[in-house]
Length: 206
Length: 162
Image (cartoon, rainbow over all chains, first blue to last red; front, side, top):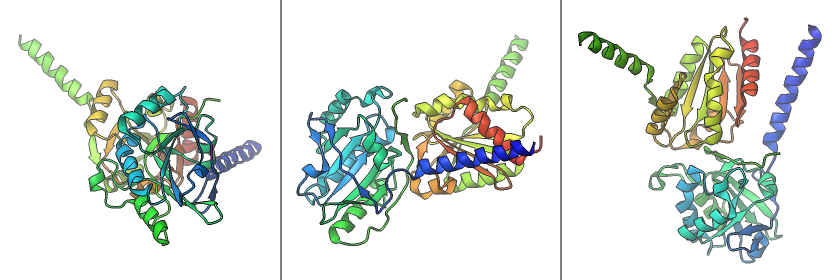
């Protein structure tokens, strides 16, 4: 009896620890992010280093199918319009496995980008390695990267775009805008981490 | 004819009684509800939405818990994060959900996600098990019936003497 309790406690502890390490994976604010090389809707592969003039990047994990991603679509288009010329282009990555989520296949991504006139790169993470490296948990989710003079990419903000998913006009805290503005002005990012309800990443089935 | 009417009335009444009223909650109200409910029994809160495929898949497992643990004293509360309440209402009717459904009417997610659990990234489905003495189990992501049963079993053993 005693033994079974001890074994049970060890098991429980093990589960606790593994759940914890799973959460710790991916980037935290202040970490350095790695570049990637992913295929976009125009058929070309894109890396962050391709944007020579950029001073940073608004990397957004988003997709075709998640209702929240759709609600934020126009706001993502607007972020790119506002900030691409200021040195912070939007680079969108669709992390979902197309076998599990057919609406996120490259052909569907192309349609979506064309219909909505995405001005930004919309890339597919086929291997899901980039998504894992960044530690994206749901769509849409923003990783704002600040390019340092050495060329290293420091994570400056992780989270949601603003504080009202239903109505952009009613949002009164614009986390990403505030963070990018702060970087441009050389100030401290006011809020570096936020959370939002979102769709789970559709991981490839092992 | 009279008898027919009577039967009709009874039938209508019964079907009304079965279709549960879904209440809307602000997060503060939901927190209050959770703290009230948890005084009465163990509470299992599942966050879901009709548009979320893995959520829909696991809902029947929660519905089955009463059958799986007939002696345990717990309540399942299904908190819908749908964009419109109507979606949750129609779905609950169609599936004849037995567990209580609550509609969370909030737009500012960042304001409350951490209050449910600091471990929660915000992806759904997500499940919180909570007892009056403050025991808590949080799980993010889809559960199978076996996984859910194992969690509930662990939770009941921790908190109740059966």
